[in-house]
Structures are given as C-alpha cells and as structure tokens.
Length: 100
Image (cartoon, rainbow, N blue to C red; front, side):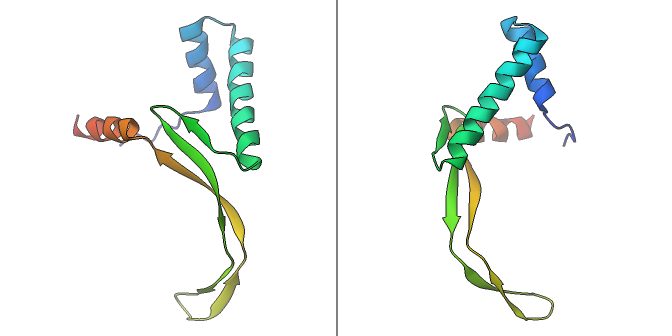
C-alpha cells in the first residue's frame, strides 16, 4: 500500500492541469471549496458530494469510560465529531483498486 498523502498542493496542481486556471487561481479555488465545506460543517450542516460521500457532524453524549489497563472509571465529556460515509460508488472503486 502506498504511503503517499494527497495534499492541498496536489489538488491545486490537478485543478491547474485539468481546468487551465493559473496556479494562484487554482490554489485559491481549492482553498475556497475547503473553507466552504468547513464552514458548513461547523454550522452543523451535512456536506454531500455525489459519487464520493457524505461528511456530517454528530453529537456524542457524555459518558463514563474505563481505563483498560487499570480499570479506573473516567468521565468522557460530550463532544461533536466529524463523520464520513463513503458512497457506494466510492466503496466499489476502492475495493476494485485493491484487486489490481
């Protein structure tokens, strides 16, 4: 399995080569899209990208956890977590890539 990580720079280079915008415009476009998605998630909205997946924010209630080593109980505060559910098309594409 590859250890490569896709970065913002990689995305802006892809926009630059595919769309033909300047490098600065491509970087700004990527930043704007990511900022828009981030703002929507902070506001509690769901972000759905067709054929890719759905990002959503979930509220988790406070609960009592346990240290597995010592068995001591510890309170875990309520929090908001980001979740991602890939679309069926994305799941199928990733699974097909593993077979190659």
